[in-house]
Image (cartoon, rainbow, N blue to C red):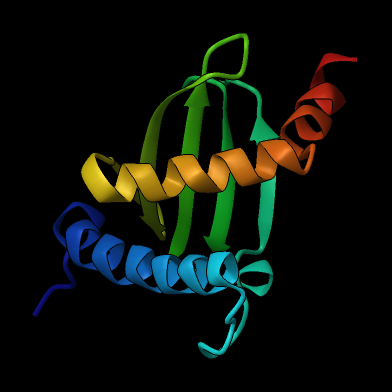
Length: 129
């Protein structure tokens, strides 16, 4: 039996990961972080990635290694969020799913949080100095 590709697994993985992130985010916003862990402890890294072959974007790294999971934030030059995607990578295989509806709204709220904290400006300025 062959293992499923990232494209075949991305919907299920996105549903699970975004569900976990939603529960943590809602607990953080309500001040009731009783769900196993806290929002601040969930992701591994939030940073900016200069374009190589793809578009420049910020990413929120959830896991690395196998599988690699990140949420990508694509913004215009004034840092207005344009698109958000969920990415899944595993040993040379890669898939990206652009988010809509409640999942996109959740990620827009998290983007606003990082912006309010100054992280977006700080991570971007490291590449534009």
